[in-house]
Length: 339
Image (cartoon, rainbow, N blue to C red; front, side):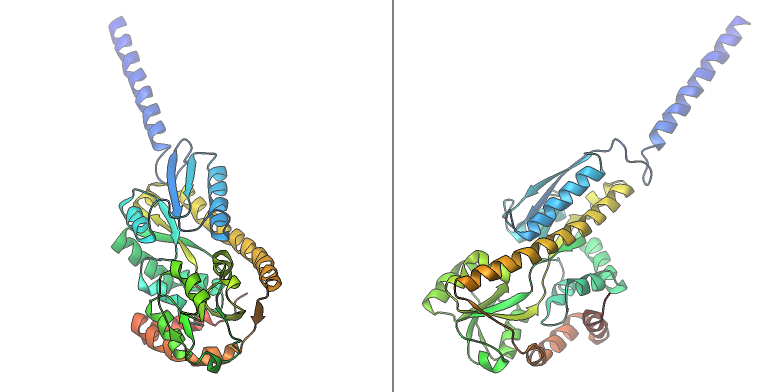
């Protein structure tokens, strides 16, 4: 009888231990508590320390580490420390680094939202990316390349600097303007009557100084950082393109995160975007004041005339990239009135 009771006691103890083990293993299953899960991630960028986009990344790091109670550690790599944008994108695809921010969204369908005067602001960018169209693009990016975009980081709208006053497209007739070699940049300045001259960014200062080119286009913060205002007399507030940086993450890594951590990443990217925009706005006023003190004149051109002159670029490339129906939908969102 004693042996029977002993056997029953042992069986009961074994069942109790097994039940506890099952309970422990299920507590860390997907969608439930993430307590105890730890991750270390690398987040790289072209941006340098102090730039608004990098400050947005710092805000992302701060929020993620705080909201995960330090279970996620984010290491930032500014200034292309981990390679060129192309090299960083390849590393994110392979998973050797988990995240990056750059001007490369990974696919033309998103890239061409930068067509001249297509988007009125970064709010409109987000409206497109969060629409059914944008979600379809992101799903395509995930399935074909193994990466996903979880947000954007704003940069200033692209403006023109030159050594002559420009108020109308006619004032740009024959003007040698350095522009990136991408088709929508080149065609935009051709449509404005200028002579677009692609060259490496590192050559632009000397080219402006020697008169090899007479103007260039970039966000204001880039013009200021590169010192172009030292060799240019005017900045024309053309605001012809809005082109953000994209927050790109390896999808396999993202899917490995507990669901609450995934949401923390998405929310932190949004907060990082808002913080970067605040810094961008604050810095723009200071940069403009300093540039004016150095003798630069800021000009508000006839924006409607610039829009009209570049309509053909939007229509041709927009239809080519998206097809007529999707282009019309994107253009409608891009010019809509948002709250």
